[in-house]
Image (cartoon, rainbow, N blue to C red):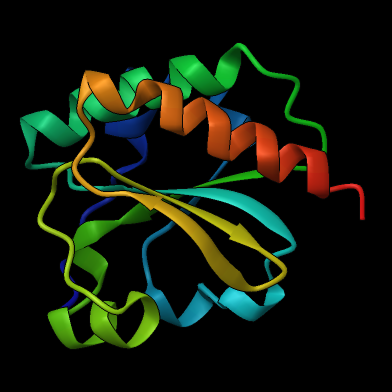
Length: 135
């Protein structure tokens, strides 16, 4: 089901973090959760207005923090089938600007479908992950 389209230019246009600081993943084969030590993973749907707004706002929040060893991964929503999403994350994403925190290969927190009211949770989860990323 993978759709071949480079999301890089759209991400670069809407991120509030330096583009070179992001890792863009457009094939599920290279996303190995078990290899991730500490990361914020943002599921980006290029066709979704809410996802584009969420990318800008989430990366703006992340830009206010000292990110240290924390990876910031932008995962192309359209590179995975629904079955692959369920296999990796337990559910299907619908382009709402979903954010996932991963520590030592495991999902430790999620914010599904970004809303402005979720910003305190985004900061809290990121700070918790940063506090543990030195271990």
